[in-house]
Length: 532
Image 1 (tube, rainbow, N blue to C red):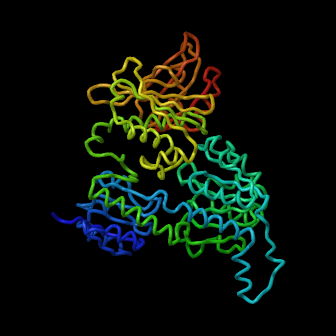
Image 2 (cartoon, one colour):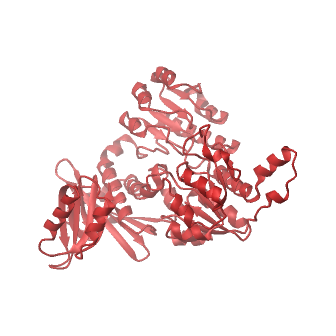
Image 3 (tube, rainbow, N blue to C red):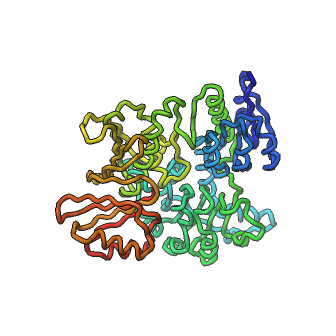
């Protein structure tokens, strides 16, 4: 039998290469720095590909990769891998979500100290033959307030170090529970805008998603306490760099440190280079010997398990289960993901607990994969692509989100069903789903306990309104005037003339103007767009 070949296309630790080659079960070839055309030429003979951030694994590479089963990213982000193309070609994409946590947290804290004391600028001054002690007067970290945007693994480790230095920590993370925040000695706020005027230092640890892009823009930089110092070791694009330049020039922001950039490497005419009160490092968050050792070994072990044993670890684009079980649970994985996404957008941002209930035939399922699918949909709405079916329980634990599974014997109108309830204190939202017809087509059949029938795909407009004659026609007219086409509609009410729930599958998401028009109607109490 031919030995599977593994191509290491970016530099990883020698320990990782040795781990791949251990026992001779895999043939390992190390060829780094390959241009795309050369990688396309040689990739057909390989069963696995190991990359870091340099090599872009494009759709063209997947098209050429006839034997490829696994792409292993030695690191967290998979921005350089075309996940959709990988999935289309049946290629598993795996990452190493925990290997660089400490190194990135330490780097961010080092930058925090550097801009507090102008260390890089003072070093350059002394080396230039000057002795400008007064020019480089700094500030202490002790007794200052640090704002942390994102309390995942790295944000949590950074907060611990800041507290050890005598700092007060205020955090924003829509998925960090109050109980978890208390255990970390961190104050948590519900809105970024509430945090900004209070902090002396600000550090960012959020994923880059449509929701977080330019989250620190000109408006928010205007809200921030004058003289704040900002560190970003997370993702380029979280900060509007043009707005940051203006804030640095005006003194609204005293200093900043960036390890990540919107374009990497920054262009030769990068405007922020002109400023004296900013420090740059070239994406060094994970660049320690220990981190590279960890991620190299971790990805090597995952690839060996996938190729030699069929075991899937840290998979970004598929559940970590064997093929036979996957065929059985696949419809539930899709339904669970949709229910999780729906619940995340319906609930208050800070959730303490999520309860996933299986009923009817669903109690016979191996529920772990389905629960992971629900949690992935639930957390990915805010956590981005770094959340996957493998690390989702760790992410939930990091955020203090309690996860409960229940197998119910309750008799309902459905032979098999799945129910998701998300709690924030005493407040609860809930979504229930099942399958219709011979094709097992998923449907949402309960929203907050009320019976509905909604296809869980595309855009859903959810309205709470008064039950009165003519309301349906009025809604249709109003949405038609705004060029929002209704694909299907489901109505439910608690009593004649009482409160009704209206769910519309629409072909496009209503804009804010349309929502404002709906909410201006006295008989419409709430309007929410759910994207599935």
